[in-house]
Image 1 (cartoon, one colour):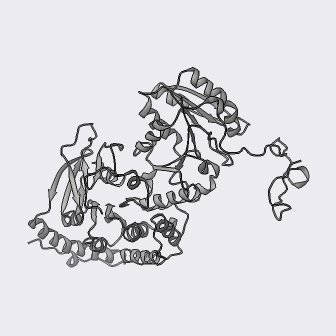
Image 2 (cartoon, rainbow over the protein chains, first blue to last red):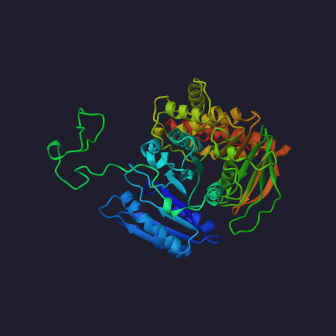
Image 3 (cartoon, each protein chain N blue to C red):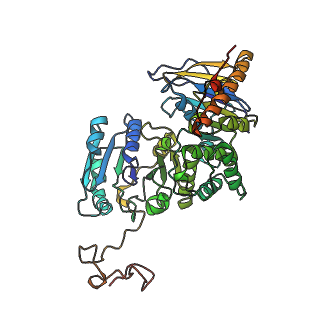
Length: 236
Length: 259
């Protein structure tokens, strides 16, 4: 089974891209799809209705959605394999930009809208830096020069990323992406690990203390003005 | 070296195959694409811009010098032989004109520092509203953005193929644009509703329902017609400027004798 993990900020065009991929491969592969989101998601119902593929969704609720993704992905891979899927597509919520949901196997795809602001590629950190492929969407809305400037910015974050541009609603110029997917190797589910390192998860904010200010928290050692150490967090 | 590009037929909006075997555009040639709104003009030049390989909404294929383009030509912005100016007159990049051009020059692997200033100077030849290097591109007017993009296509894009989508619509000096990019040995394609531009190009492609309907070549009588039309256009231009400046337009100014 092949695995695609699709990440990117809300409204970048992840689902529009997913639909193009499903449309292209649905006749030659059995496709399973998992959507991870926080509050509400409709993509699973939409994709199931439109293409009659296996879909599932999970809401992370109060848990960080990337954290939720890591926890459920093991079961989800089992689910997709049990249903004899040839291609498993995971669409992440893509919110806080600290982490990236990509695994050491399969393909990690970052979806970026060409109107998302010129500094977006740098701000998105690991989500861009650890991706295999970047798909730039909404290219019909900006000038070619601006597209090239945006792509240059992505390349400066990740010089070897596979880059492609598309109008995801129409699915233009995605042939190269389809070739990447065709060539990607089947995963070995017993050796799946995250590509990026997860965040430190033991600070007093993370465990739910609501008080604000320096007196109530440990772990975080940088004040708004001036700092005690180079880094933001001090463990026990 | 790009000698020619070839467009192979795709499908119209109802899915029928287009009625031509191939259209070849040669270096040094000017081409206009005409037809009603929604007839597929922009899609036609987008196919050229994306070097379509059956993977766009029209299903057309585009060849360079008779061959399918390499992945490098298609996907590496530094290698891309095509510069396109679209109808979009809005920039979203939060950068000054200078920063924007500098990053684009870097994307195109140009290291001459002066190129950025030369580009802004050229852009100012196309627009009456002065562009300064420290202006954010997000606040430029439609005419300024279009002028900057055309200058960028000529200087930094420096591409052998230039695609211009309705340049007449953005308050720029179109005659100046045409004068500066013709005779450069480039393939220049205009999508246009402007009869002057359409008549000045050597080839005219007529679109309808998403497909190429006809390809016409410029003939002698049309060249003469174009000369008359340019005169007329200049006079319309003068009246436009007078209107903008708050003058009252008299009947004498617009008396026309078509002979």
